[in-house]
Amino acid sequence: MGLLPQRSVRASPYLYSDAEISCLISATATLRTPLRRATFATLIGLLAVSGIRVGEAISLDRGDVDLAGGRLTIRFGKFAKTRELALHPSTVQALRSYRRIRDRSAPSTGMLAFFVSTAGTRLIYCNVHNTFQRLIRHVGLMPRSASCRPRIHDLRHTFAVRAMLDAYAAGEDGQTRITLLSTWLGHVHPRDTYWYLSAAPELMALAGQRLEAHLATGSGHR
Image 1 (cartoon, rainbow, N blue to C red):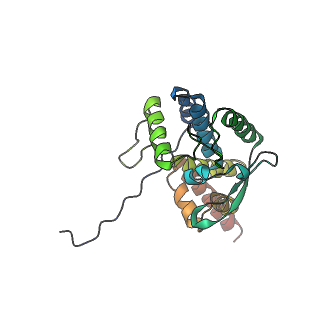
Image 2: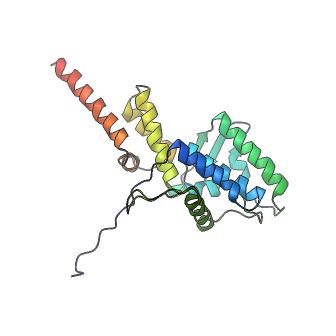
Image 3: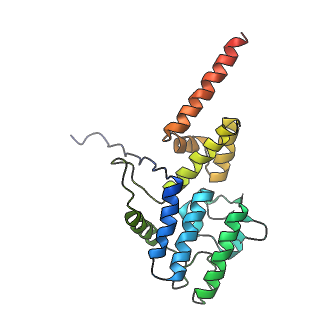
């Protein structure tokens, strides 16, 4: 008893639907101030459409968000890796709208952060997590299992799975997309990206179909 170390159980990703993400963003209207509402609506939207980590988002400085060029510079990624991400025009517009609200409503503190609290300071992860869980409860999202509970980090998992589903739907090579996705997400090893995708039955089914088709084609040329 107690002689063997326990293996930690990794949480299963909660993959959000479009409707669930929309509901979470709409639920930010229940937050106290216009700035807080705008901050969390924009933050959740950015996480959903970019797949960046929460820590990367709250570490963004104003100069890292190039709205003219439509790019994000992630300077504080995991393992101190810096990368640049291209933004969709609709995302640029949402960030521009938030910047106007932030500049008009946030106290002038000289803070370089792009996303700020009602005090004009950089967001703190634990506060972001707690607010997101409050929104989860307001929307009424429930755990799918003991190890699959809706977390803010799962917006990143959802982005990764959708990127691969889109690639398969477009007939793209899955391995090529995996490599690009791994770089986009800031993963050091593609195996980390594979784990993100392993929790999506629909994606695994598509991958299996691709493999079967490849093997059938290969056998026909023998």
